[in-house]
Length: 100
Image (cartoon, rainbow, N blue to C red; front, side, top):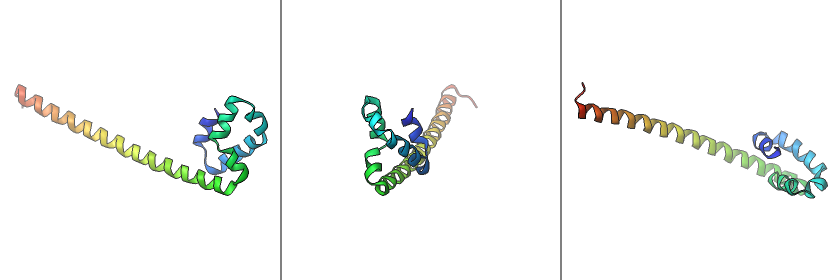
């Protein structure tokens, strides 16, 4: 649940979440899933180098935005190609059955 929430938050909210996780670090590190959350949120880096942690989060956010943009363009391109294929297929079918 924390991982899902983490992925959707901006830097300010991630920092707030990291503070809460850091306060509970001892309890979380004693648990298998707690360790996963600490690792995924990079709490060790937050604890020792907050400036670098923040920059890494900014960079990850930028990469995510770029990737989302690429995916959106890819989906639009695939839809366009599918539409073109449908039109082409209909034209080919119309010629075969001699539909005007």
